[in-house]
Amino acid sequence: MPDAPNPGPSFGDLGTEEAIREEAENLQNAEKEPEHLSEQGRPTPGGPPDRTATPNPKIQVQDVSFWYGAKQVLKDITMDVPPNQVTAFIGPSGCGKSTLLRCLNRMNELIPESRLTGHILIDGQDIYEGADPVMVRRRIGMVFQKPNPFPKSIYQNVAWGAKINGFKGNMDEHVEHCLRQAALWDEVKDRLKEQAYSLSGGQQQRLCIARTLAVKPDVVLMDEPASALDPIATAKLEETILDLKKVYTIIIVTHNMQQASRISDETAFFYLGELVELNKTVELFTRPKNPRTEDYITGRFG
Amino acid sequence: MSAYRPLDEEIRLLWDLLVKMNLLVDEQLADAIDAVTTCDLEKAQRVRDRDDEVDKLELDVDHQCERILALHTPVAVDLRLILTAVKLNTDLERIGDHAKNLAKLTPRLEGCTGLVGETRILETADAARALLRDAQDAFIKRDRLLARRVIAHDRNVDALHRETVDRLLELVREDPEHAGPLVHLVVMSRAIERIADYAVNIAETVVFLIEGVDIRHRKLQRGPHQETPAEEA
View 1: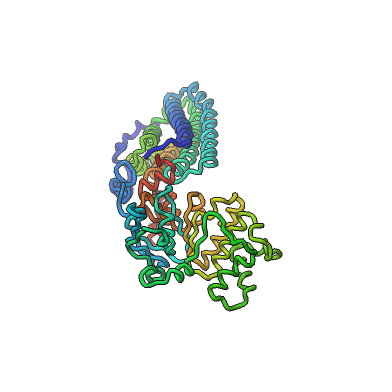
View 2: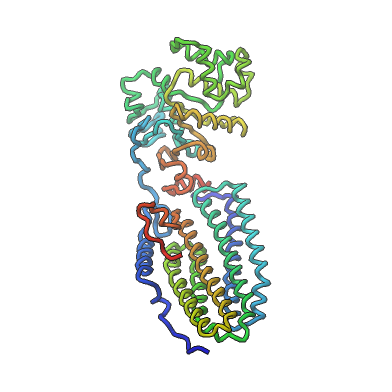
């Protein structure tokens, strides 16, 4: 039998110099708090939302506040919306997301006793000061929650807006182009003279998108466009949205967080009139920076 | 800002399963080490028999995770918990397998228990079990510093394992006739070293759960231009 076992170095003394160095580094890193974590590993509350400037923002919202009468519904919102991306606005009812959406194409100013401060710029130009609201709304189209086609034919729904905006070209081609962009052409090409109401809800919603595109906007705003649609129509609409972003900048307000996470590139979370967090969608839904965002997206809001 | 969520009940069920699995695997490892140390064949057999319980829990945890993902589509911290559970589950089951392998080899050591004392196997086993317990504690108590300490200390187990292998090679050279049990000891030491690796995996997963940061394979995450020379396998 061999000799008595060698007692060897004690447990703590083992390891090469490199191992010891790495261990020291590892523990040092461990003591360092990650930026967004407190001691319990919870994200720290408060703190301004991420306002990292977008290089070429399509839309710039600068210190925007908005009141309905005495009630302030938007508080000092500042954010950039990048071009050719889908940006989702999420938040509980009454958080101000739809109000902000409506501010972006000057629809709120039609409401008596409403007031807006701050600036909203599209391509660097203020859309309020010295701008014509009709021109603004032409550049920034909007699709609403409930499909609202005109009581006219499918063809007329698309052609009408273009015509009154002075479209001078081949209208048939233009209507086809818009219907194709809205992913509706194949379903309606043989029935363009039929009433728009003969279409299903999902088709009507895509017709409204085609109608919006007919006046050649840069930006398309969508206010819960899929909330009245079944899952198949929703999937079709989402596919359409992903297609449209190649050409347009899209902002979508949605209560459906899975929809926001499926189709958007960036997501903004609003709460009580404040922009709590604006972040890349994948970051916001995996590692939200703000605990209020986390509470909302995980359904812990009481 | 807390509201009742049906998801909380599902997570509680998952949590109970994970706690149970942690306890069972720790017990299995402790018994396996004990069986090897004292050459207790009865205990070794019990470890082998109870491996089915570990496997059953593995299935239960996976089913519960699948159920939560399908029905509740969790995000953020909830999603990280489910991902953690899936990984932890696999790692714990593997540790259970290694404990079973230690138990299986125990009868092969009959008559030559003195050999174990020639090696660092028992210290390696104690160190590996301590790492596992710390990793499990870090998970249960959500203690990210403890998790990071586990990762740092794995090197000690690796060093002990290398010492054992070196010593066993010496012994084989001295007495080639009795190489059989020595080979079994190498396999055992290797199994224990693997257990420590799984404990580190668990600790890394716990850091991910708490901090949302993936600290695995840091060499890859630093980018190729900063790549350091390959560390030991």
